[in-house]
Structures are given as C-alpha cells and as structure tokens.
Length: 145
Image (cartoon, rainbow, N blue to C red; front, side, top):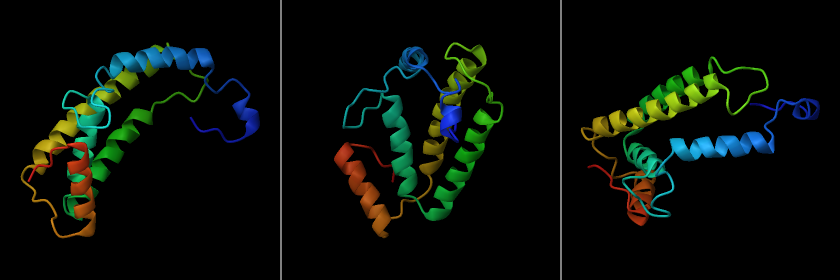
C-alpha cells in the first residue's frame, strides 16, 4: 500500500490497530520459527534460512547475483499483480491466500537458489566478498564453498 497524500491516509485505506493485531496473529502462524536463533543463525528459523541464501548469494560473482535478483523481482511482482486497490481487511481470504502462497513460494525459491549455489565458486578476492564472509562468520551462517 502506498500512501500518496494525507487525505488518502485518513480515508480508511490504511490499516487500523485491529487490522494490525489480526495480521500479527496471522504472521505468527505463517512464520512459525522465524524468531528462533536471535542474533545467531538457526537452521530451523524461516528468517535465518532466507538470510543464509542472501549472504551466500552475496559472496558469489556478480552475474549470478544479478540472475537471482531478476528471478526474485519477477516472483514478487506476481504476488502484487492482483493485489486489491480497495481498503483491505486482514481477514479477506484473497489476501490471506496470497500471503500464504508468497511465503511458501519464497521458501521454495530459497532452497532452489541454495542448491544451485553449491556449484558456483564463491568470490574470494573482492572486498564485498570479504565483507559478506565476515558477516557469515559473525552470525554463524554457513557459506557453501
């Protein structure tokens, strides 16, 4: 949702506290395990699994990172192509279905990207590669060679 001006912000198109509370409950259900691990990598955490994919992509050569970025943008654009332009409700079935499908598709994509990275050598000489390997060491994220 994009708020273009203050009039639209007050016209009922923004989520209320009740909407956010309902959405919060749904997110907890969807992201079971997302909060595990805290500041260190946890293999059973939804968030950390995605972060591991991101860090592993960042230590790969640029052409591979660009390919991942293009595929992620294409995937994400399908999630919002049918997004309703009217005021939304956290219990609206179409939004709940889109949200659940998006999380499932993103988790599957993370797994596919991680598998494909195993055959692509990490960039060990660039400053950016050094930085991301250091982030991985500090957080316990496994970097595939």
